[in-house]
Image (tube, rainbow, N blue to C red; front, top):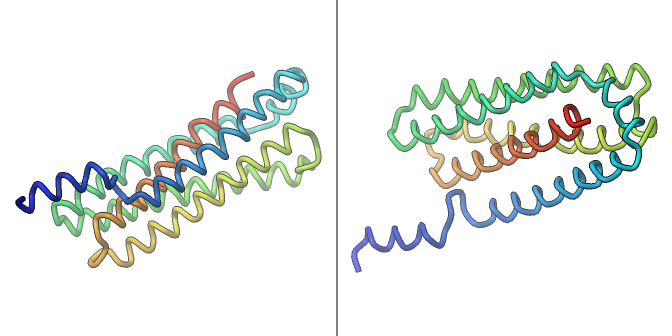
Length: 190
């Protein structure tokens, strides 16, 4: 059996980024979906109360945060291409862009958190705000961890393997996916 056949067979059984990252993604997505499912169920029990609280959120902030995360995710796809093709300069600048868009998300979300907190909308204000703080706060932590992971990849860009880069990218795309479920559930669907 030649080396190419072995690599092809390995890729069938060993997904991009490795099995561990996919297990993490599976557990995290299931956890968030359970929380969002609970939110949707409780929203059906008190639609007027949820709509009243939902109107207090910053839809514009959430829209721009969606743009920031999706742009950062798109840049990560370019980063994998740059790594595969040994384009170091492109890798450096695009990774910096991906990290900056992630930081923009955190900054804008921090402004929203600050606004809600100073107006007195805390975890115990209502069931809606309990969901808001728990779900968006947990997601915020995931994005912060993702930025740390991307920063480690950037600092080790000369020695990082494609497998490790893919694992970091998959974690980041998980943050995108969760936000794309959270965004409409909290901000849009009434």
